[in-house]
Structures are given as structure tokens and as C-alpha cells.
Length: 318
Image 1 (cartoon, rainbow, N blue to C red):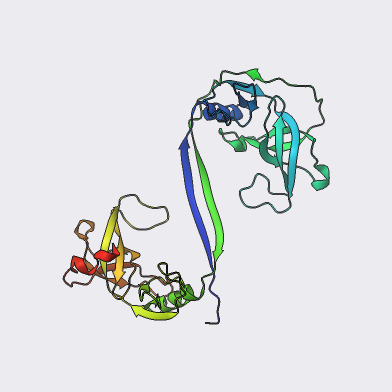
Image 2: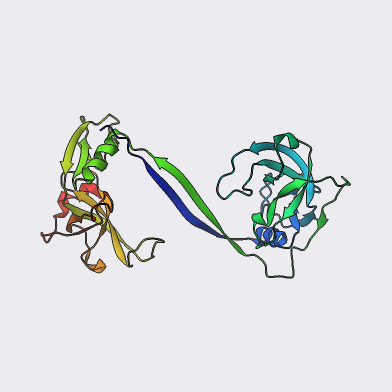
């Protein structure tokens, strides 16, 4: 094969978590333009605050308020901001020790260029115009030419007039380009022709689908290509009751491990053409291929009408 296959891939999901008393007070404070930290039993003020002392592991709830000004302790210039970063123009990533704190906070510094940034630079918080109770309520830091009078952390109740922030949703996303190797490229090329091709291990003689170019059992390279299926047997399955984002499939539906005829490793596939509560282990199925141009992989698998496979024929593939 002369053409190198490439595909742009995205892994994305929202990470939702509830907040304890300390984190709730910290994010609620940011919404109200107040920066809170915690004081440990040894007197160290931690910003951002944590719920347990990193040295003793004891629970910490002694909230204190620190200043919105501070000093850069170290930095790195970012000449090409990426999607979702705090600023769209080049900026510096900085660690800032806020006045009254003993630890540093990581955020962005809006500066005209790297020559304007240095360790020891005095900075202040630039608050976001719309604040919701998130770290992004600090839009960034900016240079501060004001006085450097000392600021002592002072006790704070952690209570504010508005409703407390009790949870956050943090989107996680990874964009990457996938380039399959020799074995995967041959597998994908065969799928485009509605064929399924695996590779046989020269030592244990097992056939793996999809192939990875090496036997996971023996650790030796595989090169002998073997066409398998396309029919197979459901070895085990689960019923999906939660609808996935951007997936136009009504729930409930069944997702199964399918051992294709001639393969020694089951692959994953959705089962269709049968009520979800009638899917069973041993069910014989065949692929339903998508319309031309709609993808390479089977859209789903449907029953063949054959008698169920005997358990002994697939029990080693569970």
C-alpha cells in the first residue's frame, strides 16, 4: 500500500465533580472577586487551597483571604495559544505567589512580549467580566505598578451573599492525528471491500482481529494475513440504557463481543435487527455494512437465523 492512512480524532467528555467545603468556598470567592486559601497547622497558607495538608494529610478548613496582587516566581512564554487557553494572543504562563500566600498559583499573564516578563515581576488579578464560580473568573494576571506593601492573610468564614458553588463541569478534550501501521492499514483496506482480515501468529497460530502487527501472547511479529468471518458468535454483551451524545441510536440497545468465524479474539459490535431483550450468548450474527462513503466498519450485526452456537465452541473467547 502506497498511501499512508491518517485520521483526525477527538476524545471529548465533560468531567463533573461535586465540591467539598474548601473548594466550594474558593470558587464561590472567585465569583465574588475574593481569593481564598487555607492555613495549615504549621501556619503555611496554601493557594489554591486543598482539603488535606500535603505534609500531614490532616483535614484543613481554616480559610483565609489573600490579596489579588502578587509576585511572579517563574514563567514560560507561550507564543502560539491553543483553543480554550486563557488568552487568544501570545502570553506567559506564570506561577504567582499572591501576597499573603506561601504557595504559587498557575495562570496566564497578559504581557506584550517575553522581554516584559521576569521572575519577581509584580502582578495583579484581572477579573473576568462574567464570573460563574470557576478558575476562569480570573481572566488572567497583568503587570502591577502599585505599591508592594505587605499583605497578611486574614481569616474568612467562606460564606458569601450569593448561592455557593457546589459543583463544577470541566470539559476534557484531546485532538490528535492517528496513523495506523502496516497491520491496521491492511485491516482497514479490507473493511472498505467488506472483508475482515486478521493476522496469524507464527508461533501459537492464533488469529487476531483487528491485527496489531504482533501476537499479544507470544510477543512475536505477525505477518500472515487471514480472512475471517464475516459471520460470528456473540460471546457476551451488555445493554446500553444511556444515550450517547452525537450518536443517533435509540436506547436501549446491545453492544457485544463477537467472535468472528476463524478468529481467536472477539471484537466489539452493536447488535441490531432483534429486540434487545432477545440477544443472548451464542447468537449467530452477520455484519450489516454502511452505505458507500458512510464508513468502513460494519454499522451493526444482525442475527443470521442459524441455530445458536454451542457454548463449548466459544467458551475460550469469553
